[in-house]
Image (cartoon, rainbow, N blue to C red):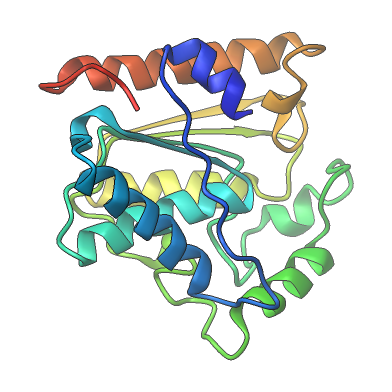
Length: 216
């Protein structure tokens, strides 16, 4: 996936090897993602040349890292793109049950188990864990894609609504009858390739809006 996005943006991809739960529970992953962002900034890469991209739990981590960056007083990147984000660790969206029969990848029970592994004793509504409950004011422009055959459909829709409520530039694409992170099947699925093309165009357009368009 990083290579697919990199090819479509003409930019170097930096992959974050963040610590994983349950050995390293929240907020280790957010801390690591934020540390990499700080390192890029400290190395002289302007925030306007950086785009965040993540999928599934990594999509939720992207949104959480944006909030953490804002809370730390860091500048926002040029944009953030998330594919099928897991943004609500309470697993309370209606689609957790209404789409369960058509989601071939995830189950609500599985998500709840993983949430406990990740959170430990942390409240699942903590904004840096579940960004649908965060104040998103001032966040970078956000591009969200999700398939209609996903139990995480409501996570994506609610994250977009929350961003809009807080005056964030947000674009939401719901692709009908495709599975969780369908972009990963771009070599076989026309919708996956088209979705990645759209994401690449969004990222490039946001870089073009900034003072530096070298890309990161």
